[in-house]
Amino acid sequence: MTNATLSRPPAIAESLKRWHAMIAMRDLSGLPAIVHAEAVFRSPMAHKPYPGREAVLLILNTVMGVFENFKYHRELATDDGLSVVLEFSAEVNGRELKGIDLVRFDEQGLIREFEVMVRPMSGLQALGEEMARRVGQQLPAVQAAGAAAAARRG
Image (tube, rainbow, N blue to C red; front, side):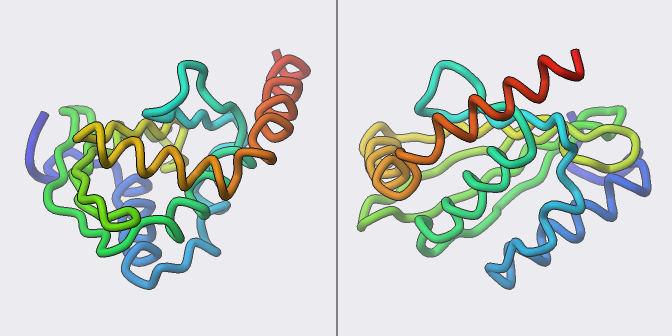
C-alpha cells in the first residue's frame, strides 16, 4: 500500500475525484455512474454481503444521511491502484466513530466492492441501529434482487 496516487489508473483517479466531490457536496446523485452493476457492499454489521448496484446505492445514500461531521483523513492505495483505503471519522446520534472504506475498482474505474469497518463498538452499534431504522425493511428485498440478478448472469 502506498499513501499516494503514484500508479493509479486514470479511470480510477477520475472516479475517486467524483466520489470525493459527491461526499463534499453531500449529494450522491452521480453515484450510479461509478458503481458496477455487480458491485458488492460488505457491512460492518452483517455477515453476508449485499450484492448488486441497487444495494450499494441504497446503503451509501442512506449512510450519507446518518453520518454527522463526516470527514476523510487519509487515503492509501494498493500498488496496482485498483484498491483504496479511505480512513474517516463521523458521528452517529452523538457517538463518535472512526472507520475505513475499503474500495475495489475495476480497470474502467467502476466500484466492484465497497467494504466498511468501524470502531469503537459504541459507534458501530449506533450506526447499526440507525441504519436498521432507516433501511431495515428495504434491505432484504434489495439483497434478494441483487442475488437473483447475479444468479441470472452467473
